[in-house]
Length: 382
Image (cartoon, rainbow, N blue to C red; front, side, top):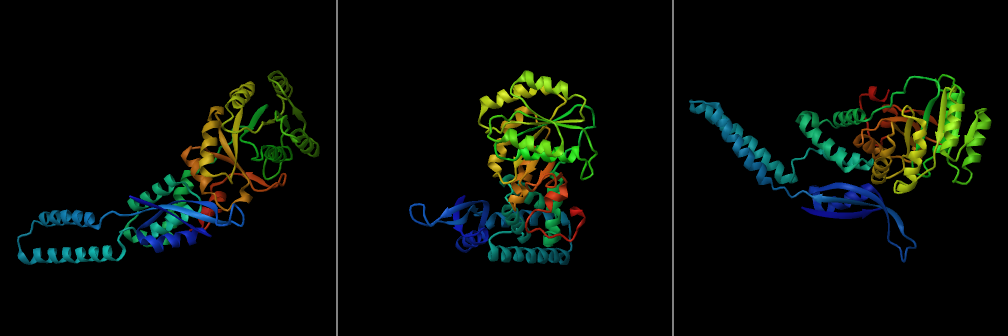
């Protein structure tokens, strides 16, 4: 199989260039943002590079399979009258000619709607595996007539994407409930903690008002302690900063009559194995009933998200919180990784505003952010 890479100032320009060089047999597998041109790193331009392969599957294979089926059809007919057999043969010949004509014109039997939906999914940054599996499912489950209706193909694709997204079901309210946020550096855990404190402590956006306490063990990042303390003062919510296992144990005992205890942790690289192990040891004090949420930025590439989900899996996180949705136009990366790791999503945030820029996750709120999808069925977005 022959592979290729082509570049352009945009995704569509790169795809068009590939199609003009390799024809309709060019299949796009992946794309990424790049900088190209310039001299010694200066005056370079932003662009997109697409990777793909050339579909060289011989048309004769299709023809051979058809000949086999033709013989089966004639044998199964079991007719004795010559005129009936002639009609069957004429019908087979007509179908045969149409196949040859179509193969000669396009070199591929792939329906146009599948090619278009494949490009749309890639444009939205869905993973290669999810794109491949979705296209295979379309071929297997939809009739030729349905595949000719691109709106219907889009609708089915959205439905399947929606089915792949799990929404976290909140545990029953109880005294001393603990929510812990873990995740890499720079994803907005501290701001998210403040938003959750406002939602629950102030009783807004449909949440019942609760007694809330905040604990931070992020004493290494400059300004972290002051930031969360400022939020606590504004909302009249007590904040504690701890540095040891004994301190955390004592604070949890002190706060056990509160409705909700929110714990902010240090941001760690997924490759920082030693410090991740130390943080797991510290959080073990919170007990098995504590709910752990992996907080990730929606702007992170799918490959990096996969690594984050895998390395933080040792924390036994219950669900994910997606941040910075306002900083990206593409969510295929996030939906793909959530699906592949069968991880439910609990909350999404789309700005720095406390408390307004947070909401409980819903399937429709994620699907609505996908680019280029138009559906005659609006119910999926309600």
